[in-house]
Length: 325
Ligand code: T6T
Image (cartoon, rainbow, N blue to C red; front, side):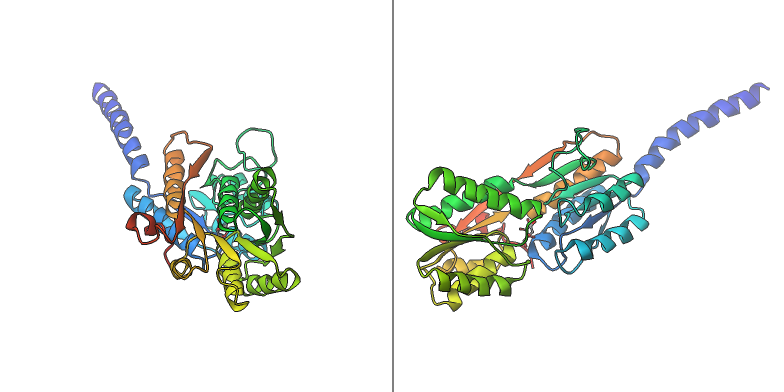
């Protein structure tokens, strides 16, 4: 009897020793669903996410749609949920349309963290909203980004004249907030500047370029444009060039693909506001892992900007924030 009891006690001790070790050895799979796959911003975010995954021994799955659209993103999300990853990081392509599809993940017990963009109001875990179930929101401060853009454009045009925002489409948290910050700053501190009607380009740079030319045709006294994301900015800059207005119509660009360097050096783009997408991806994976291993995590993590212009773009401490291709 004594021997049986001793053996049982030993087995309990062994189990106690083995169980935590097994928990630690579990290889987590974290899925990252970008806004779209063919965008230097998300390609760079993936690199940061992969760096964290490598450091933690986590498997990172990167799966997304070829365009920035809920219609194509939701089926990708459904496919990811079906594979039951341990956590989902996602840049939702619409504040409202991704709420119910993401609730399915949450209901299936898969923790959701949003990166870059948010759903609902973006304030999570308050118990107040229908869309506050994600654990954390990791992103740039996009209202501030819009304010920075407004100040840069105001400076470039001598604080007077007509400008407009080239934007993607309403309903995307990031670009909505950039426009909001831009308009707020212009209204509060730049009375000599008129902000014309926003042009929505559906994330199509060619459309943004034609819109620039159409706005310029209607307003030959146009002096500036704010491109509120990568494709809006590249398109608007191309439009300025095609209209033969380089240097006359000033461009402030959100985002920093490598091609922005040439545009800054030739004077086509005055200022580019680089986000830190690698930082977003890195902290996204770190936060998911922290949660999965029983740590509490911040409900919001703000990442930085680097402001690029002709005077600093050659500095490696600045150019390291250019996005990967
Ligand atoms: O500006 C980024 C991202 O922050 C935004 O949500 C969507 O557009 C980009 O991916 C750039 O194309």
